[in-house]
Image 1 (cartoon, rainbow, N blue to C red):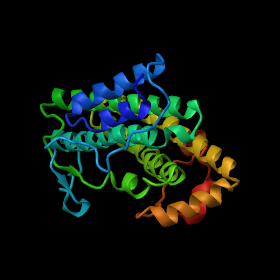
Image 2: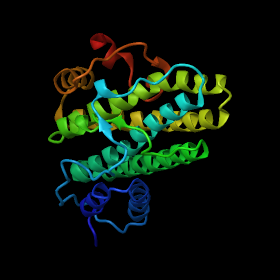
Image 3: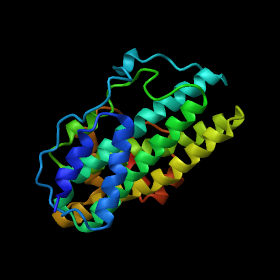
Image 4: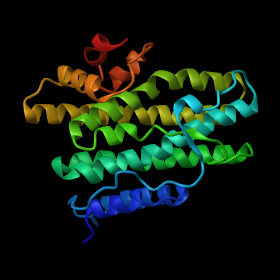
Length: 263
């Protein structure tokens, strides 16, 4: 029987975006039907395989997105979000393949489901871009989204603290305003996609918080102070308000974690 680690590695080493999303969904189906052993015996790559396009630029070289309601501006926003979802496929799969045998089966169930969600989100956004006359890869994208994975490759507790509980939680803060902008511009189709992603991301942040707390309990650590220490030592950015406190609370990420270290 193929191992979970081998299957995860295969997804990570798939470069074509559409092949990768299909591979992630196939991984989820294989896991659900019991075709994979919960054995993470393969070495995960330091860097996943990605396509030649989009061109990846440092944050300070990314073109500024124009404000206003132009179709060009909406395409740029949707492209940026599609790139986030594309990288999120690899983030979820790497979490499973790298750390899955350190947790109960429920951890793998949750994060395989997250990977499948991210693949679906990417497909929805790319389909919307094509409807608007563009596609994923047509514009440059942010080069730094994998940095958090590289900085936490040695520690599942740090990975959970940074990726779902900081980066995905930030999506909860900013997505409602983005949805409102698309609706104000008359783009209900895009707004509905982002609403779906927002709902799913609450569950993703919840999975991160639940398993972070589980591992803290196993190790005898207090969750909130441990999270604060890891964020200060492993996250290069700053936690900046405003926060969507209600959505974070729904995900189990209460102010006890982030309020005392927010800038």
